[in-house]
Image 1: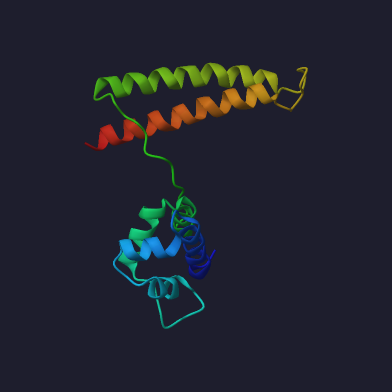
Image 2: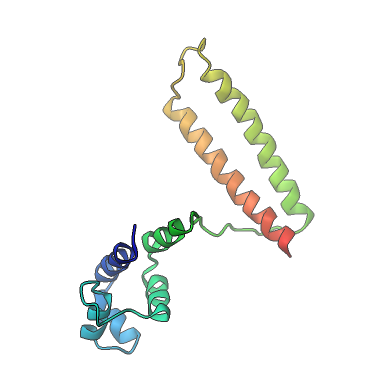
Length: 150
């Protein structure tokens, strides 16, 4: 995805936001026409500034735009985890989730073996179980990483 395509994502999110471009323009103390022109990638002379883009991404919570930017540098965007614990609690919670994930991993591994009832297919219930565990593991891993950076 190139820069213009990313800007189109932001433009679409701005149009679809509550009050649209007009409301955003007034919040940014700009005329709606000026902001609309700056968001329009086909108008080369009216380019959106970096600070304006950041403000708009935040105002409209444009996850698509943010994800597309992150993808440009081979990264992904994940939600900020809710890390209520600190220190040893964070490590302990991570280890609990890792242990639980390991148990579920073993169950799934045996479920997808060639001699199991399901063969290589996972049931919807198994997929949901894996997804829930992966989400918890990622969240706790991020909490642990943030704790270790402090």
